[in-house]
Length: 358
Image (cartoon, rainbow, N blue to C red; front, side, top):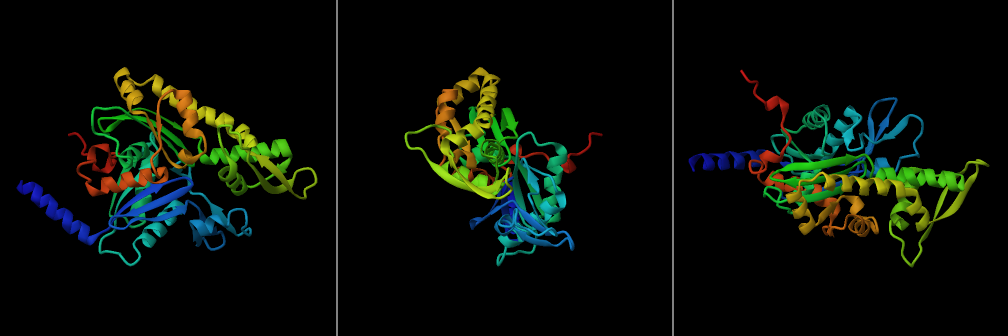
């Protein structure tokens, strides 16, 4: 009892001296939660850099607006590719900027304690890159959790109980499919196909079918405007503008929802097949739980029109979508911050903290 009171006292002191911050480090968007204030930042994971000076010109939404519109000496880059860090220094700059902005007016003596969500199956090298980037950006403590587990916690699933829960987290760079029980992942599959791949599919389809080259930003806009994976009675249409590959001149073409379905069909099929593979290798008792409790979808892909219905039809299991699937992971990080000790067994181990066996 005395030990528990002492731990509680130490925790109160630590909270008085530093902030608790949760980060959903996404390929497309990064969300930042600050304890006591909620989700304070939701920004695109894009950084604009001046190649002459090496200085960061813009981060987040301002940098995304520069994509495809910069002069030669300014480059707008996505430092997180397919859910993992591809450019360490730029990611460090982005995290540093986001942490600084999140603590504006609320900065404390010590650096923040940070919980970061990462894709399942991340390698030790990639885990260390995330940890080092956060520490170099000013974090005093860094805890890393796999995104499917964070999403499950954020959706209030019983991850610590001997009950099977299945999560499909469809983000920007990756789709994480996982079956969870007793604080761990029983079966999982990480597919490098998600929102960004859909954009690539649309760019390729418009180039091949209409001989018009469009940018990824235009592809994303048309995907959001009329994209769907299930045919309905009301057809939708949108105009996209790009460069005619024959004449080299500007041209606009009308794209329909049927075009979008055809463009992304193979990618959607890969996600469905990945979910099937996970179910096929799941132990029978846990599979029985999943069939009874259903599958939970998180991430931006959960908002794609018709996708939950398609998955339910193909998998023959009920599909549940939370009220705001985009916040599932960062809410899970927030819950972990509330009681780090309680959730310690679901966090990825820090190699530096492992004592060598004598």
